[in-house]
Image (cartoon, rainbow, N blue to C red; front, top):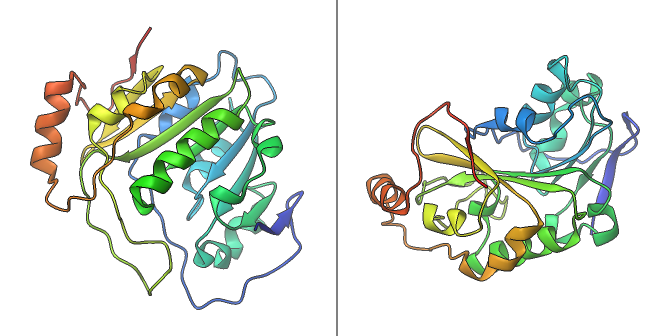
Length: 239
C-alpha cells in the first residue's frame, strides 16, 4: 500500500523514523537526458527508489529538463527524513511504499519510469515480477530506465528489514538479453539501460543470481563475453 507524503510539492504527511536518508546511486544517471526525442516537451518522470533524490536533483538542475515533473516512490523510511529535499521542491509527489504497490493506471501516465539501483535489493523472483509489471503497465511510447550492478555488489542494512541489503546480482547477459535501446556504465561496473515495450517480449531471459561469489571480476568477464561495452562515460545506442 502506498502512503502519500508529498502532494503537489507540499508535504501532507510525515513518517516517524530514526533512519537516515540513503541511496546515492553510482549509476550513469546522465542517460536521462538522452531518452526523450524532445527534452522541451512536458515530461512526467517516476523515480522508484529515489533515495537521497540525486536523480531528481539532476533533472531539476539542468536547463533543458528543469520543467519536467518528477514523482518519487520509496519503501525505505529514511528517504522521507530528507526534509531539505522536499523543501527545495524537487519532487512533485512522493509516496512511501513498495514499487509492487503502484497501480498500473498510474504507471501508464509517466513518460519515463526510473528504477535506479533498486532491483538488486529484491529477491530474484520479485525482481523479475517487478520488471514484467513495469514494462506491462507503462505506456506504449514510454521508457523504463533501470540501473544495477552487473555483479553481486555487497551491501548491508542499517537495521533488519530496511530494504537496504543487496539480495541478487544481475549479469550483463540478463540486461542485454532485454534488448535495451541504449546503455552506459559507471565504475564499478554499474550498468544503466533504457528499455522500451519491446523488452517485454524478452523478459524470460532476465535471470539474476543469488550467488554471492558472483564477483566484480566474474561480472566483468561475463560482460565482455556478452559484447557489453564496458567503457565508462560513453553512451551506446542499439537498433
